[in-house]
Image 1 (cartoon, helix red, strand yellow):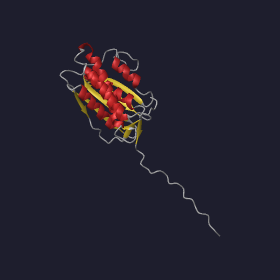
Image 2 (cartoon, one colour):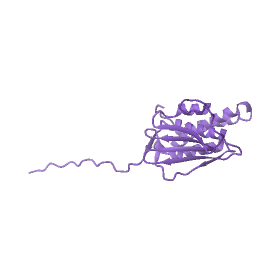
Image 3 (cartoon, helix red, strand yellow):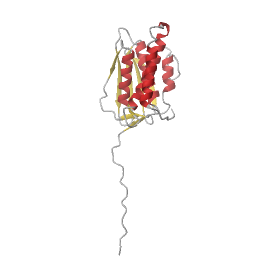
Image 4 (cartoon, one colour):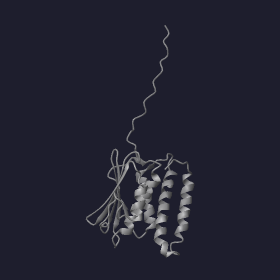
Length: 219
């Protein structure tokens, strides 16, 4: 997570090229199709981050734009799944710290892929939601699915698959919390983000004016 100067457009195109090469092997290797599909979506999610960075003059990425890019990636790589990106009730003027953009994108991608994998059939709609207030961002994923394993315990790493183990390893240690439960036949994942993971554009006050130097008075 150290800051490294990169050429965002070049890196995005390179990652998309790698994802395209892997895509060609999906049908040729059915025994590894699921693993390849997960790797492809991860690569495209990282590419989406650098694609967003290449469109703005400053590195921080708006949270709504990040969710939109990841949702589009999930739809493209899982065309048979239904995903709805719910619009927030209020405008979200918040950004993700550039050092946490890729890990956060992978966390959201893994949770969405986990939802696609475990959703009920026939496929219902997975809902990706966003809520913001003055100092908190909440990202939710609601997926109509079977109940969680009886031994599921997120805090103690019990009953977790490889995807959720990866999510926990990528989740920022400060300013982020993940909760997962199952109610009314819906599995709900909730990511709560605070500073320093997210930055808020609440302050619109102009910077203080520089003191005016007085000319010495002549008697």
